[in-house]
Amino acid sequence: MSIIEFLRNLSLSFIPLFVAVDAIGNLPFILSLTQGENAAERGRVIRYAMLTALALGLGFLAIGRGMLVVLGLKPADFLVAGGLILFVLTIRHFTTGKLVELQGISGKEIIGVVPIGTPLVVGPAVLTTLLLLTPEYGIPVVSLAFVLNLGFAWLIFAQADRIARFMREPGLRAVSQIASLLLAVIAVMMVRKGLVEILS
Image 1 (spheres, rainbow, N blue to C red):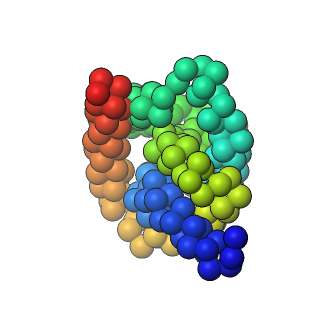
Image 2 (image 1 turned 180 degrees about the vertical axis):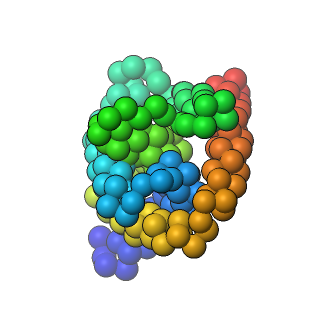
Image 3 (image 1 turned 90 degrees about the horizontal axis):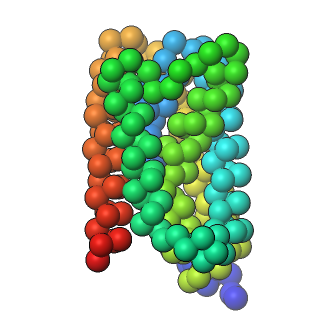
């Protein structure tokens, strides 16, 4: 494979993963989930989230297609399951003001893993995209595109503290409510797409 062809395949893999990861679109959720935490705490949450996303994505690249064959699963199944999880989390946020219940010091690790690391950063959309890109471009190219996307997402999330200072508490509360509504809509869309694929 020539360098030009490699870069072409990398870009063709990077773009759909960029849309699926949606780092910029997920930033409001990061702000609402880490509201009230200082820069060090937020950085710790983001670090756990990105390590979780990296492990999940690379692990799925390694065993994903084989797992689907063995278990008889389809990509649409991930859309339905992930959508239902997101919808339950948003209902919890609207009723209790929290997406997850944090208890003690382990709460930061928990929120970094779920729901930020998964399903927000690497959820059904990313896993499905990885699954669809691998046969066409190969695991090495798709893996590099995935890692580059996570690196970009990490840079975006690292600016969350500055954005939080700029928006202040009223702005963060507004963002939190809007983000929850959008997350519910995304969850319904994922379930709808999954069901359409299953029933078609």
